[in-house]
Image (cartoon, rainbow, N blue to C red; front, side, top):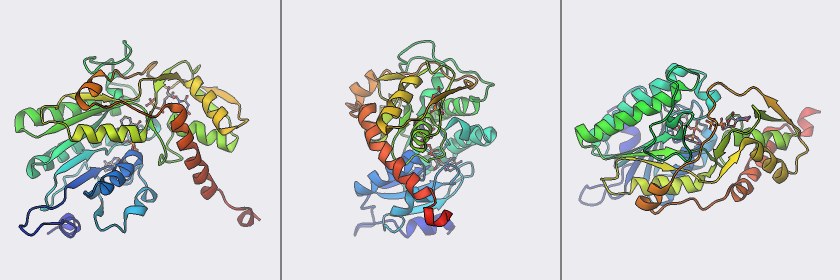
Length: 344
Ligand code: NAD
Ligand code: UDP
């Protein structure tokens, strides 16, 4: 028995007949922003949760509150290496991959390996276990889109050799692997194309636009708008995304095609800066930094398919979502900043 067997069998609940009494769900990337909140939701639903994470961008602080729970196990592991254990697994969410551009660009080769080797390893596990598996894909597979909104049928406009390519092309290749494991090996696969998602639990040093702007506003530092701020994004609150992910996981076997999950309301980055300044009551000024290479000019999901197949649509506006997110960052900064006594 290896380390995984020990960690997992210890936790596997069985009924009197030896069959699994509760669903066992593996969340790869479960210590990250979305993953940790998903683990909490799964635990609340009565599932047994195995969180697998290499802590590259995830944080123990995100999962500390769950570590004492009998139905929760954490395994520190990099998914570019195979995972093997004898315990049953019913569902796998593959959320493992740094999602913030400055983070995934730090080690592009590892990012690509995470998407491709990680997908292969988890698909192999799903095949062995007879588990259903969901891939956290991304709107980035559309690259710098030439149409808006972007439906799933749009094939994308992606640069294969730019700073974002390790992420975009890795995620595209992962979709291909998922599709082919479904066709060739009959694995029950799900592909969620996730658009920009924010909320409590993002790492303060994450580097994505919502967390950057809130932290800069709260600290009274300049708000860093890249380029002229006319590029657009459509921001989805994390709990809306989790509803969509869980509905997709529970959807019929035939729903094996990619499904967009995102909020349809589009904002320019300059509009986001204004909103964050107003909501935080900050007197920060805005400055303009260089626009990163290949930064998509527009992004807005077409969610007709998600509405039709899952009956899903986001409920939380950006306005309401920021009201839930800003206090969380305020609390983080209060903890992170040294007290006056410590400074003295
Ligand atoms: P995140 O960076 O907060 O979380 C990613 C998690 O994966 C972290 O805990 C990290 O340590 C872990 N991880 C990274 N590489 C790993 C590896 N090789 N082995 C094991 N663990 C690894 O990002 P997030 O925002 O929570 O995103 C979760 C997933 O959703 C990612 O796959 C991301 O690509 C996808 N996604 C997110 C968004 C978004 O806006 N949040 C948008 C599109 C897609
Ligand atoms: N951005 C910005 N200031 C920041 C961080 C990001 O203007 O401090 C811009 C970035 O150039 C992009 C948008 O905000 O146009 C969203 O960036 P993010 O990194 O959050 O995600 P992306 O959608 O680019 O992957």
